[in-house]
Length: 337
Image (cartoon, rainbow, N blue to C red; front, side, top):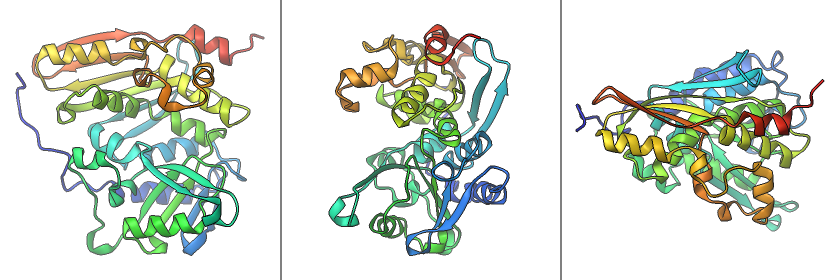
């Protein structure tokens, strides 16, 4: 049985307050990290990390930390076996960092009639999600963020190649209860240095989401770390999406610390890896194409790291399942000299 009881994520921790210094640091390094900062519709701040600006891996690391609501550490590691560069992440509050902040779960859209031109769609991630609380996930987590006295600021990250139209900006401000000067929106196209980096930096979040899908009690996940190889961006959005998914599904490794009974901990380790999926074994781009580019037709079990380690605090035991498939990644990414 679990050795201790733990409070729910509904606490005094504010993912927006904790991430404010990280947003300030991103802005301070705009020139060094090749970002462009401008005023968008309604006067919100727009940070271009890969649309017209070049962006950088360093910016992507910083953005991944912002997405985790200031409750995670994100690092670049060189010299890994099989692939030269990896992204490493860790958190002592993984449920809050990954699911209440980093998870791209806020659906934002506008028709071409509403925009007066091109339709817009994006999934919002980052700490501003917890102010709006539009997803049922927040009810399950028992968490909502509030800016004390209405002061402070918030940040939302969008994996898009253009700024959101004014109608979407108005929705963001309304749902988050923000004034225009309080909101920063960061644009990170997946086919960019920052975009690829911040998506691969979601390796731990993917594991937390899979644990949630499996029905594992989230309040029993006490800590987590993960790593995944960082590929160069794809030549276009489709190739980039395939590469970032493959990095996690076939190269990602996570270690979760839980407090539960041993049978439950063992089952989590066994069921977590992507190899448990019927769609495992082919590049993600091929799977996506086979299902007519419909995410919802893909086996949900595929969206998981390749390897899982689960340590149970209640007993001191650890279980391991899965393994990285680096030959698949190298076949997709590497041209031998």
